[in-house]
Length: 127
Image (cartoon, rainbow, N blue to C red; front, side, top):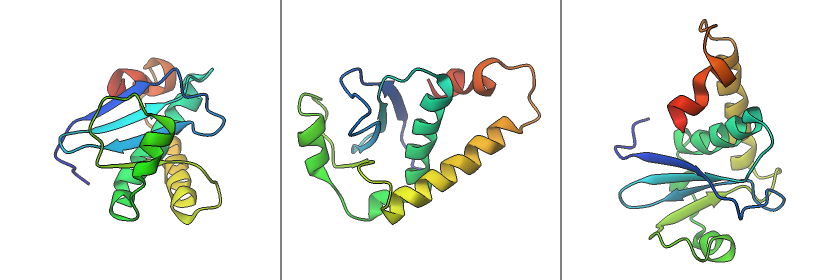
C-alpha cells in the first residue's frame, strides 16, 4: 500500500511500554510511529512492524481514537487526525496486526541478506 507521505519513526522516552508500547499517529501530511524505550533491537523492530501492519491493513479507516493522543501524548505539539495504539491483545485489529508483524519479521529474518548487522539493517532503513 502506498500512503503518499513520509513515515517518521521515533522513540518516545516518556512512553513506558506497560500501557502503550507503540502508537501510529495519522497526520494530514505524514504518519508518525512512536515506540517506547526497549532493551533490544528485536523488540523495537516488532513494535514498528506492528504499527506498519496497521498501515498495510488500513486500520486507520476503521474507528478513530483521538482520545489516545490526549490521554497518552498531551504535549506532542503535532496536529493528529487519528491515532492507533495497542491497548488490548484481544482486539481483532491488534491480533491481525501482530500476526502480520510476525510474518514480516520472519521475512526479514529469512531474507538472503547475510552480511547486514542488527536485524538486517532494519534501523538503517526505518530509523
